Image: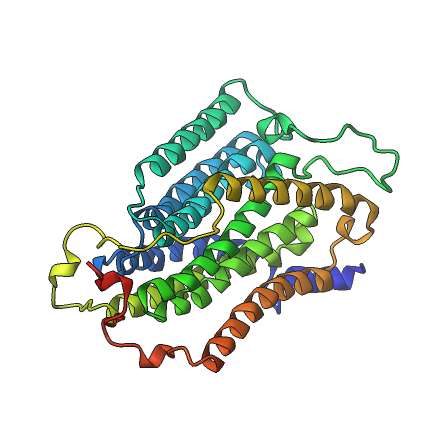
Length: 377
């Protein structure tokens, strides 16, 4: 890549690299307010969101807190960015993975179990979180070096690799960190599908709007993975800037989607209804047949993400472009992957209309009808 092309990459449509570095924390900080509002609207009792799924969305705040702490440690200990310090990076990203899997299991159990409980899920999530913070504290006390690997790089292949065309840089993600990243992305896509299906459970198609509202957040995660694929090359800083913007934009779109769901279920700004007091209203459902247990679902997710982690981490060693900044390939990834995900749900929406399922605009204000399982007491 020529010097001119690198300049174009770093400038991002005329915005200099220095200005981008100023914008990134502004985007992330500003995204907190709409996310808190999203949690408020989502937690409205009339929405009937499963308690564990609701807890999963709330748990994301722990990820935010952990990322801030890890980022401060990376800067103060090594004068580096979090993405380049694998043991801190993997620890922080694991908190997002926990959040996403709790959301997935929460919706899955909420739609298939008679009386889903959130106690066990909360205990497991908090236990793993405690371990991760202890691991980070251990890294500070010992201390770990900048390029020590998350979970000691378990699963990494020994270098040099005779079949590889080049060596990895020191800041390359370890297998555990790649696995955590890919699992987060995969879990979020599964969560989007379950949110979509929850519209049938509640007979309120406004939940489908939340799936579409989650797309910018999905695209944000693809920006992060793409940046890591290029070894966090500073000449592709625009990926981090777009990630920050999409996080802010995604929190706004999910907030609007949650507001529409709450409004359809009776929420108003001035009127406090009985349904808005206390915990989530219970779902009374007939357990779905032929669904995987949570253990099997987790096993499938782990197997898929571990295999894909090896393919990406070591497969790219035989490619030329990851070692150099390539804006065209980077842009194709951050646009192409979310576009494929979006097209799936667009096709699902078209299919639903062709089958004569009720359109979102035709759903009753309360999001319920006489045949809804929520009204079968």
